[in-house]
Structures are given as C-alpha cells and as structure tokens.
Amino acid sequence: MASGVAISDEVINQKSIVVDHDNCLTVKDVGTTDVLKKILDKFPPKDCRYGLYDCSYVNKESVKEDLVFILSAPESAPLKSKMVYASSMVALKNKLQGLKYEWQINEPGDRDPSCLVEKLGGRDTVKSLEGQLV
Image (tube, rainbow, N blue to C red):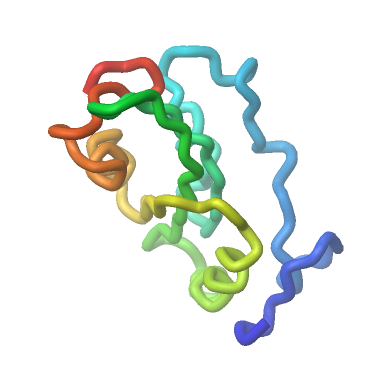
C-alpha cells in the first residue's frame, strides 16, 4: 500500500482498484478471430487501465497459456489518473499470482500483435498466437 491506493473488494472510486465487469471478456465473447483486437478495444483511449489476459500461443516446443498483464496509460489520459495508475502498479502486480509477461500499450503502435509476440519470445520462437500464424 505504499502507493496510497488499497487493493480491495470495496468499490470506492480512486481509493480501490476494482474489476470492471462490464468490460470483461470470456471465450464465448471473443470467438476465434481478432482476439487481440477485441481485447484491446476494451481499453479506453483516454484513460488508464490494467488488464489481465490469458494468452494462448504455440512456440517451438508446445502449446502455451500464460497470463499477460496489460498496462495502458495513454498520453491523453488525465494527469491524476496516470499518477494513481503508476503508483498502484506494483501493489496490484503483487496481488496477481502467475503473471508471466507484461505488455505496455500506451501508444497506438504498441497495440500491434507483433509487440506481444516479441514479449512471448519473438518470431523465431512463437509460431502462432490465438490460433493465428505469426
């Protein structure tokens, strides 16, 4: 709680980090095409958000599923929002067990699937992402 923002189940704006149930996606919501686009479209273009993504991909060795912590703090986000976001990130990460990768999507170019592929090991290692060849 070094950031001043508690991670709790209570819904108190700017005092707790809460799950945005209205923007959660399940497998049936996403389907099999444009998975990353559907996920990234849930992030607001002018405010900060964190996301947790259960990523499915194939590398040289096997099929993998890893948790990816998505971080979004667009340049156009309000300063207060960016400050709370930055100071709360470590506390939130400490609550989330099993995170393997982080994907920062602050700018439009960061949203390209190739950025995530690089995080997962690069094109020489990753053969497909969410059923799509890379």
